[in-house]
Amino acid sequence: MRKKRVVFGAILALCVVFSAGVFTGAATNQAEPGSSGDPLITKSYLEERLLEMQNTNSTASNGNSQSNVDLTTLQSQIAELEEQNVALQKQISTVKAEAKKGSFKKVTVKKGKKLVVKYGSELVFYSGEGIWITSNDQYILDLSQGEHVQNGTSAVLYHNYMIRSGSNLEAVKDMVVYVRGTYSIK
Image (cartoon, rainbow, N blue to C red):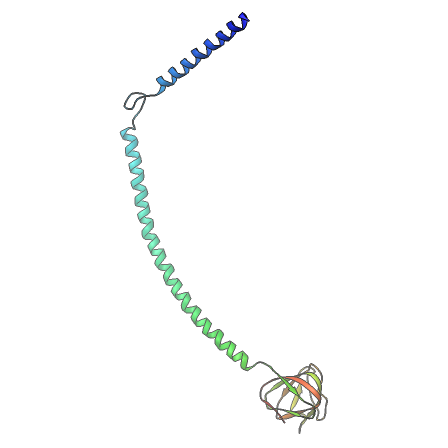
């Protein structure tokens, strides 16, 4: 037991001595402000840093004037593009209006009625059954087959016809056609 006390006391003494050395060393390494252990910045270092800051500021001010020029240029380009956009929007509106005028219109003709199609009109026969009535075989052109339609000929499904003069399409059964141009039903 005595041996344990001696070992314990020796360890405790070493810890106290070691701790005292650590605290003493740390205290001597801390320099007081203004002492040789606490260096101040030198005048040359300070002058170098101030010169760098002045150069940075002058470069930034030159960059700002260049940025202002670039900004003005970009704003003028934006204004030009907005004007072009307005002009293009007007053109699109005009084209859409013209396209609506020239689009096909679905027409349903009941059995026994006649579809009178005027000069320059175009017709697509979609469903039903109909017979072409014309005074001259040269007045109706079947664009799908590339030939003239004879009087009394049945209309062929899904064929595209061009009318050169007022011609009639008589409905043998209810029929649906798509017409681009002037027409009437009698």
